[in-house]
Length: 180
Ligand SMILES: C[S@@+](CC[C@H](N)C(=O)[O-])C[C@H]1O[C@@H](n2cnc3c(N)ncnc32)[C@H](O)[C@@H]1O
Image 1 (cartoon, rainbow, N blue to C red):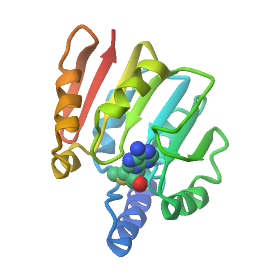
Image 2: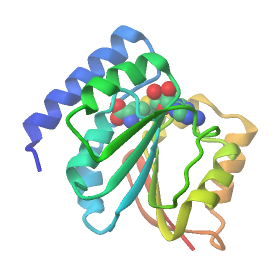
Image 3: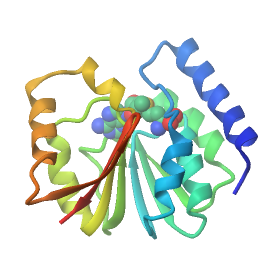
Image 4: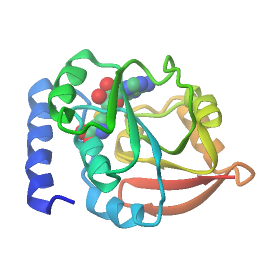
């Protein structure tokens, strides 16, 4: 695992893009707390929704050097930057598509959502691709408020349904759920 200075430098680069591009691609900053939690989450196949320029993907790739990581990004500018940033990580596959159009032939033991505001279109994706007892990690929660539509509210209500989800941890900008 690289040290904090390496990741802090990457974060600075991702932030610079976010400011210059004036996009909503805010990198995920609570990664040190997340890494503490990830120690308790075994994972061999991971799906990340919302690569941005690849900051969080890089953290995940270093945390899980033996996992296969698929990461999805719909914005072409972000894909181009992420491609460069993820080049040295052979166990990461970047897909230029939206989560809603993504098709995979496998299931995942962990899905990370870092794509601004979630909505109900994501729930069938979690149901289809997340294994039972798999983990759903929702990051950058402060961005959710920017999109307060009824579908986003319905999404949050769904995750409170304990028939389907068990909240495992909640800290700063992040919730971790386990699928039942
Ligand atoms: C908050 S940024 C991701 C930050 C990134 N994970 C990081 O740590 O640098 C959100 C990204 O999700 C992408 N995105 C949003 N909705 C998406 C969707 N439905 N499918 C694929 N990408 C999506 C946006 O284009 C944007 O690049």
